[in-house]
Length: 189
Image 1 (cartoon, rainbow, N blue to C red):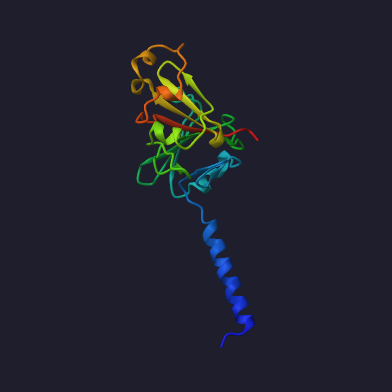
Image 2 (image 1 turned 90 degrees about the horizontal axis):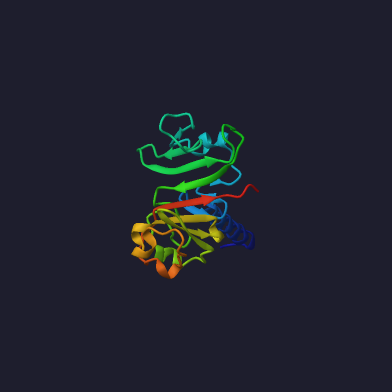
């Protein structure tokens, strides 16, 4: 027969186990100030421990044919590129990460937005803060998730393809337009 003490002990055990299950982190989830195990306070010198089972490639401005600043590429052991990280301060191992380019489509927000998504995924789930018209892309800003996404102008109607002066509205972008780049930018604080 169960005593009151046994029932309380069982109840506490169930609560503790369920709390531990809730704390399990999805290594591919994008949320505010977090992308998998990477957070906005992680420093460059901590990346080796976070991505211990993956490969890290650090590129410097001085590398031949590399024009970007000190990018850090994260690859799975199998070779698939996951992320491209850009530190806030070049050559400083104590620097935090400023910009993250999401490469692997397994990374996604709680509403399913990923690098292989389409404009409808953005339009139906997020408030668009603004859209910039650049030479080759429409740049869509979503402040709520600290993100900006690009859509190649080849996906847009012809009146936008060769003109940077025309304002692009969400209604001008086809629902099926593919996301070209998915980037997260973390504030300094």
